[in-house]
Length: 348
Image 1: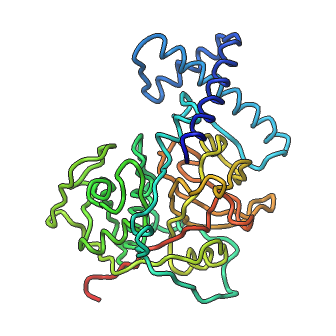
Image 2 (image 1 turned 120 degrees about the vertical axis):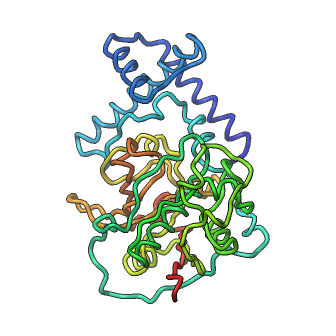
């Protein structure tokens, strides 16, 4: 994303905030604002900053309510809800939560994970959800660090390790943020490069031994703190092939996927099948968020979806999860950049 695009974003955000400041603020809105601050432990530098953030929050609330009126009428397929991003302007959310980074491995022409074409099958399930087993580890929160790539990679490693060993281990995203030099810490990276780091490094620390700090720091990995996760390799699916992604999820396990997550509707997604109005990443040059695909299905209204585990905490979305449109030309880039690790038992 170039500087010109960012300036336009900021101009639109400022216009939006000014429009809200021109409206009156009701007692109900003020009470909701105080509850928002208390729930999310929000504090601000001074009164002017707090007043501005309140106006941004009110503006976002109005946007959410107007969208949900259309949802109630059946005009859109998903519901929005207020969350901890409610006091941010769109360009601030992009800067804080989304990545603008290109893999050094891809620049050099050396992909971190070899490509694979999985054997086609006609025996796939109509719906699949790895949460129905103990394969999927708990939802985590990357906070203000642009480390979605590390959370997606760790979520995949935790799941595939459990599938192989039936043992739950909680791994360290901070280990990747600090030590994977193919990536760029809180300024972005890719799950594929994280897998390659773990392979080359001979392991990854557990969360208990290398706790998350929400910032980039010096690498302090010690082999003694390494978990017993044995990653032998990783694979990259054919881009834009949703059938390959479906096969991989059911027959191999959860898969890391990349998204273009700039749409304000994505920021405040709550439930339903997400189909965004501004979700085509190609005009913008690259995808900007990584998550873990853990299932698929079809809604009661007949809408095919992918089930995705995010890393923005339990309060975002549907308890940390997202259903996003499936079989809609790789909506938001869901099938454009998909990878998974190959985990083995140490005795194999």
